[in-house]
Image (cartoon, rainbow, N blue to C red; front, side, top):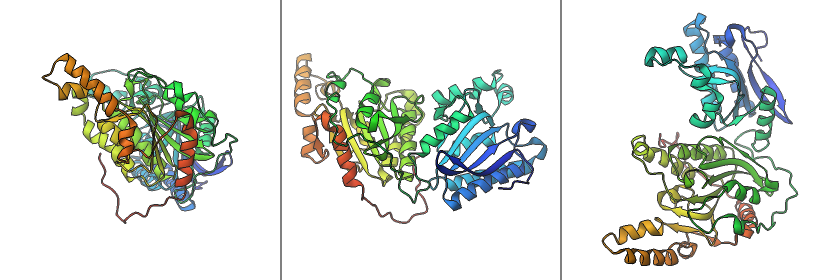
Amino acid sequence: MRAHVPGTVWSGVELFGDRRVVVAKSVSDHHAGALTREDGATIAKAATTALTQRLPLVLVLSSSGSEVREGIDALHGWGEAAAAVSACSGVVPVLAAVTGAAISGPALLLGLADVAVMTPGAFSFLSGPDAVEQFTGIRIGPRDLGGTALHVTFSGLCALVAADENEASEMLSVLLGYLPDCNENEPPRLASSDPTDRKVPELRDMVPVSSSASYDVRAVIKAVVDDEELIEIRAGWAPQMVTALSSVGGTAVGILANQPRSLAGTLDISASQKGARFVRFCDAFNLPLVTFVDTPGFLPGKDLEWRGMIRHGAELAFAYAEATVPRVCVVLRKAYGGAYIVMDSKGIGNDMCLAWPSAEIAVMGAKGAAQILRRDGSDEDRRQLEQTYEQELLTPWVAAEREFVDEVIDPADTRAAVWRSLDILSTRRERLPKRKHDAGPM
């Protein structure tokens, strides 16, 4: 497309694996790949074509930003590109790969993508080292400011790391294997000979009896999904929340799970943002959601509250509440308070809630409840209340009696129960009232 227009960006239709995608790619190091107005128009043309043809859009970026020599014209071109890419959001998958610099405008294009892959030598930022030094007096290098490792751990911009551009393309091809071309289609079926009724007796011993002991929830997920295969998205950012693409019985699904190995699985601002973004991504492209719950609550902290824990915690609740895809929740162990609610509880609207016998569904743990209810009592009174609370309230049976849990299952039956739920819900459709757009928490 626009093959004879001068510039540093090439665009066209390519095969990623066996999938046709529209690609816009930086192909020149002229002026460090700075984008001219025509480059912006080429990216916009690619995005518009992806939208009209209902094909995934892939951006391969290596650019120092807008072409300074063109001034406002270059900025206008970037604006056109941003508008066109934004129009694709939620309609076709928007994937990005960064192989070098992605500065200023191109950096914001990464923020518009559903998934961004970066190579180790890549870096991205809005305001460069010179601007930082002028404003703060601190000297810093480009990779210390916005290198791949920082975007993996601190910003969450980088979802996956690839060794080079070829591996980045391979990763994006694998991701596309779980996604439809557009939001009007169902996700592709994935080949698997893994029996849907396979027993997983190892799960009976995988979660420690002690509610304070940790374990790797990814082992639970792998035991449940097809062939133990999953692609974890943004693994380095907010690791107490696992988000991954996988399949159950050949059905592509989005997986969310609390990770007890990191901050005991508590929810903070980053974990809430990570989970909410992933829920909305899966919902946009018709991937059913399977949520594994083991969380003691929101992470306490003055700094967190001042930075907006309420607003960001609400993001996760809002994302789940507005999701229209089939939603299956499995409570493994702790499910306390507001964190239980926002992790796709029955109250927030899940379609099927399963619980292991070890599930503890309550406002809070026994010790915290005893300290509140027997604040003026003796130590012995509090110990007795803890025991009573654990025996009578910290069980899944109370929630099941009140229809907040659909079924208490043997952990060994988890895979079969999840698949059975997804199969029942496969014809679920929801008719939504018309509205311009939501005004969700920001």
